[in-house]
Length: 128
Length: 173
Image 1 (cartoon, helix red, strand yellow):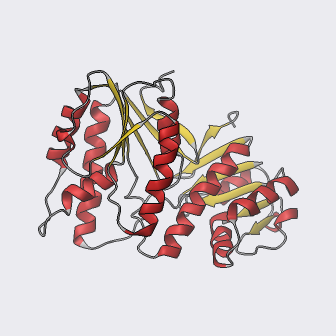
Image 2 (cartoon, rainbow over the protein chains, first blue to last red):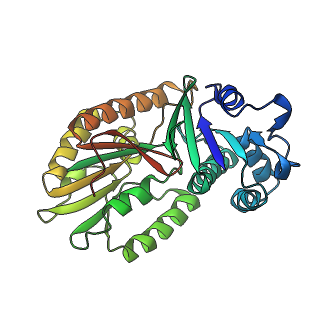
């Protein structure tokens, strides 16, 4: 499994398409919870976590299962924890769930790539 | 040695800080700066206290004025977290006090009693949202503190999804 993280519009999906030679059809937008088991690449995983939180499903348990069923998946998600703590409780819990889930994914990923200004930095695993 | 650990929410900063101090068993202090407001905070404090006792930390709760703490020489201190300390100093009265100079002075006095001081902080300026003037002042104070502390730290680490990314110095073995 490969994890790609970074801020909004930092060039994560463009990088994944180019480096892993993915077509648009191979990238599943994670605003859909279904079909994740078969996806080659899932983007917007932080939004999937939001959906799971809204449906009161545990994002960590969901992710554990996904990693078992789809162990070679490329997962793209935004870093969302670097701001002011949200006043709204649900926003706060979502943000914390994103942090915890990203730690879980990174722990099991063979490679973690962080994109800043479109530039990839490998923070876990072998260089590109 | 002074180490600054920064990062977003739930990215493994505390676990890393605790790991860095795991071989120290004596005079190891956890300086907690979060005031227990509300049930979420109380729950978090209860959980953390138990974990730290098992890891041989003595917990000191000090929400402001950290120069008042007296410790034996050569102590090891984990301060968590700078974000709370900054807010507590800033918003303790009706009028806002810009706390950077005071906190820097107090940190230096705390540091003089320690062999190792680990400061855990929070990135608060990366969400791009324009907040009220008070909150913008808080973000600015945090940014200034980060730069000043980084300058005098031996090591600065950013935690990203649980992975320590070293941005100054090196991780002590």
